[in-house]
Picture: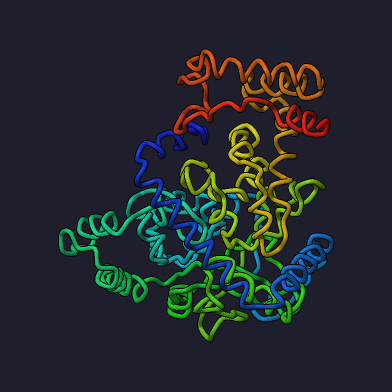
Length: 458
């Protein structure tokens, strides 16, 4: 049963009630952004790598059909079973069918944002399958019965005390324990039995190579390897945009991915899978779920270049101060805000407006997606198509009238400054969304244009 959608602005207001917590969340993500900056500056060729990655992905977008057919052919030659899923429902049915075919009722799973997008866990649990997330952050949010708030750092919204209390309740750790090493060891012991007793393992796919039919899974914990190598059946779920043409292209993306995500030179485990070991089955599910539609949108197709590093989230001032759960979408932050409307404009019309359009997301994107420009374009599409609330639509039309008439704009500015000076309560009240969680600025004595004209005369 799906939960009611709470718009980003409303959910953010709830998140912002605890100001010290919001400040901590903001500073923590900015710290990760700073690590990214330091790591990238150690490579003189950083911008060339970004340009190369962007060029490879542009080629992929223009040759998607050829590359996917080539990948399927090579994978089958390697003995891998390849499945195609048009949408989330078909993906989930394929996974369930494979488990039932092998009479498997329990499965371990490593991090996969695609399965979050498909709501696979909930579907399998409803059908009697016990699914255990083995990534530490994912396991934490699974125990809390909530989705990840970040695509790389799923539990970044939680403090050590929150995790200590959670593990005390579910894993039997000491009450009040907050030592990260102690808590991590408890999780490790908890998950060891799951790895040893599950006959099926599901992983995501970071990169799939058309040239070889192999794929790469990047993790920092080794849980994908542990699950896949111990299980009788390995299922890999991939959105079709994860394809790259050649094995040699991996060097470009692996140098960019971890540096952009966490500031590491490379992920701890870059695991290459090509064929199943003897006695094991390997299945790859290639998923569309709206990607073809996005590919056909000239203004938005570049969003499919995303390698899911999360850099845009770490730098975004709105994401940092509103939290990942306020985006009511599997992928939060700036990149999620341009992917989500493609899936459902009605449910996700609020997300492209959850941005200052500062452009910081585009500046840090390792594959040079024009994220802030796409956010702006989505706003235009949504307003014209009538997917925004009537009040917002009226406001946008009113502002277009004001901004298109210079004299009216100048007069409106003078009137606004006068009102803010003489009767401030007209704007400093709860009816003004800008007044929430912030102090309205002191009105300037004159506009920039007035200042400019006056100084030109002098």
